Length: 217
Image (cartoon, rainbow, N blue to C red; front, side, top):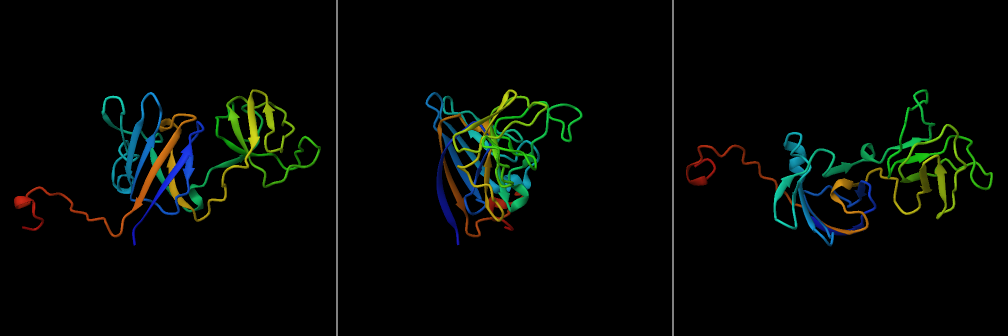
């Protein structure tokens, strides 16, 4: 049986995992940027069957109606099961000799404190605590004292982190789509219509040679 869902979110400048509950066969996303509302469309079969550069949907420009394909990693992709859950790394110092060399931390990056690291009250940070980078920057050579309060910020050299309390991170068994930050306007509302078809896929293949457009005629 087919199903559909309408989802709304406010873009925050990072990739967004939308846990629809199913992998849609088709989705339409509208970014309500006041200067240039954009329309994005995607079919799951594009992801399955098209070559690189044609898999992540296409966009219609609100100002002139031009239609273009979205580049790899800058459009829409499906996720299903834990294998495509967000990556959560453990904090590491900047520098080439670090266990995981990192010279810059991008906004939206999710990390955990190292084992035994403490918070603002001198308490060891819970291993389930996850921090999101809210201001991109370079980490220092000394782990910061983590601020585990909901509105508290942790400054790590030039990077700034905040504990995650407003999003689901346990995505085991979740299904939905990943919307790249490149097709969202930070701070603007985005609307998504997702549709799962009921046996709607009919592979007609190459129609070359079909008389009068009738398959097998």
